Length: 301
Image (cartoon, rainbow, N blue to C red):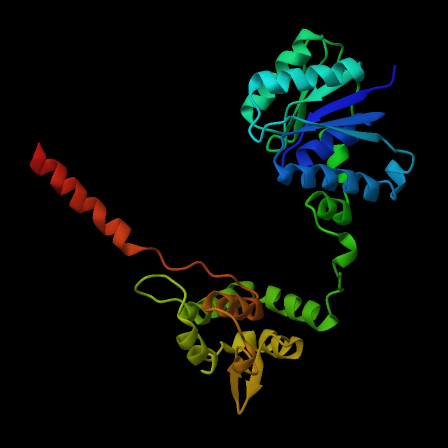
């Protein structure tokens, strides 16, 4: 008897894609709520499988997809149990993937699988493992590590609902590789200097990013002098376009007026040029409240 897979649909499609690839069922029955968001998730899963079908490991893997909709936006335990039971009657010899859907849907699916003596599966992405149990005889399945390693960038994008054909991939220019290598040879000094310069884009009092107007002012100001040991790294940064040299000074951007958008986007663009994302300063006022709160408790006692 061919193996079938009954699974609950959620917006996190990898938890459904990984077990599907590990089991390689003949039929995949996707059970979802009436919420239209999950119709898109079910389609994205099919697209991801189609993309993987173009790769060598899954060249001959062509499962049939079927969809069953529970007529509720937030399905109850009983509604899910009935819908899963219908699917198991039409497609016997199935594994029931409990990972998707809500907790109530998972309970309903487990009750139905238990009643019909079919095994259930859970995909634990945090622990990187598949958990399969239940009254039915568990099928053989590939390991989590093996299946995860077979994923491609295009398949993960498709699973997330993105069209891989619309994603542009570019090779990193040689100048940027040279910059990364030069900065890596003086990693501690480079990180210290850049962190000090990037801190200018945060308000020291609040730790929040500067306003758009103040951000432009900072972008127009030259960077502080870099240590002599960073000479090769600075030169490589200029060649790669990460820094701009003018009249003997270094600037973060050749033309700050070209930066558009809100202050957060300006700050991110600045950090990208510096190849560093500094953490904002700690929020001191939170620490200052603790002694005060302790003193109030002591007075009440």
